[in-house]
Length: 118
Image (cartoon, rainbow, N blue to C red; front, side, top):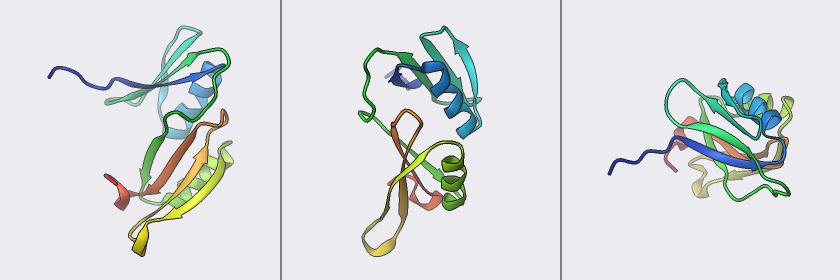
């Protein structure tokens, strides 16, 4: 197979603003800005793209993020404009994660690095 994921694309009615928020939140940079389609790169690997679609509603796809200090990152993201939706813990307490929403209402999760692959 000769396919790879290049971008995860989010439909929004404000692509530049949301791309900038995610670039700042994840330490990336806007690599392409065609007005209605804006891409964020992270040096290598999969990027994020934000495309203008009128009347979109958030929630069809979400990102799972992992951090060594999840609580610190959750706090930083909330300070940057995300909102806390819920906190969860796996049965037996093996790991926990927080569901957040970006400024457009798209949900994403932040978990400790030990949760990678779950």
